Image (cartoon, rainbow, N blue to C red; front, side):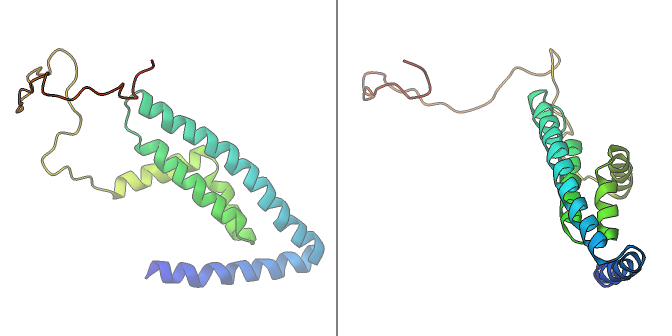
Length: 158
């Protein structure tokens, strides 16, 4: 229901703002502001998106939980869509999502509303000397002479 209200209210707010701002400053300055916010938003989304991608890659390299960088990247992507949509209200929302403190607040709110279920699996795999080094499995012995000789696998350099 709230999504229906948003799809109904956002265009009405945008139209009202266009009328008010256009009446105050005129048609061409209003259109110039809309175009300039789209250009500035594209630049900011691109630079912050690259930073979010770097944070995501860093979390993968350091074996950290990538949830937060992924969420920040998604919010930056959504802000880009808002900034490319013509209008003052959507631009304000898009620019707000480009502020890291606002994204952190959205993350805190989302974390308070989301429950993670693990279905019996451990949250994080144990690491270090306390973890077991026993690996269970089946094997089949292969006669090395019966195996056909092949060239290099392609995974190594010659």
